[in-house]
Image 1 (cartoon, one colour):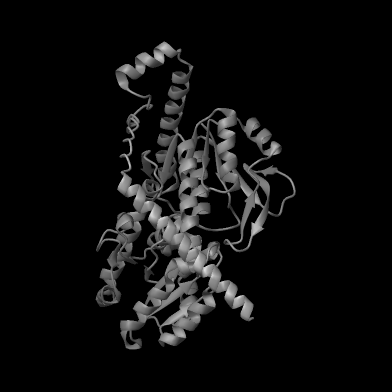
Image 2 (image 1 turned 45 degrees about the vertical axis):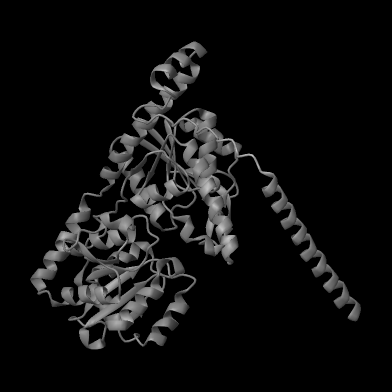
Length: 466
């Protein structure tokens, strides 16, 4: 199979979407399939391809993560995709490149798969500051997501959160949940030299006896770092022998540093600033547990990388993301500061052998999420999408009498394994307005007009005095 993967962001940028797309491409190739990545790049002037990656001219949006955003229309891009001759197009973002994938799938008459990675309701504050504007923007993003989902033959997401989000958007299509995967051979504490981990622990003032928790991610409001620091400050004491390492850069890094000082936890909390993705494994290996209070993740790849490195996880309870944690096997969840502290001290009380066993089971729980696993799951989605798309096209080519006979027997065409569309509800005719109601409305309009005229007169008198 030949698959075109459309993503607004790719290497050298690093985030959950990039890791997912990279892992999927490698998995498809391991299984003998061909994949090309189409991405935006503000450093190129014209569309160019290199090693199965197509780079498209773009502009950089500094306010939104510094992402590169490309135009959805490009004759050069269309020609290259035609030459690649994909069986399916798979979009992973909703901006210029994502729209481009939708348009090309329609132009080339091939099925489209749409994977949503980001809960945009949790990010609208980057663009809109006021409540009414955020509400308006949220409504617009819901309508936009619905348009993309309607255009796709299949939609997927890394957790049940995506399914719930699509339901809020008014999308009734089934959502295939395919958890993210990580490079378990890279994130493996057992291959990191002990001298390197010892040097990192010493750099941030951690003793060999300290139990070190870490978080890795963008230092932004959506990661809920402020809540994590407040929970930490409420109960954790220097005498507990527990430390926290916050890894990552971002717009609120300095604000969080100040919060740590204000809360008086600088003796147990350290910040690294930005760490390149290739350098993260030794940092993870230098820590004992992963901790997060973020509620915006679909299926946190950073958390999975921590688990792959042999770190049990402490995470704030998120009902739609609980499949990432198996209590007592690879981590624990908490609802408040007291529960978080209780789990911290339980892990601290474990013997060295018990802690090593917990680290091992945490890694084993994530090993199955390898490159081949995610590729196999998505190949099943691709095959279903192709089958459904071809069936729907065949149905459209049927003569009118054949369509009528099909609908009479089966209802509206719904495609393989897809429920029939519900019939439109009949609109109920509005009740006749009575004379009394009509009079009441007229009197209300007159009162509004009188109030308006009175306000205008007061304003005129005020202007005369000035």
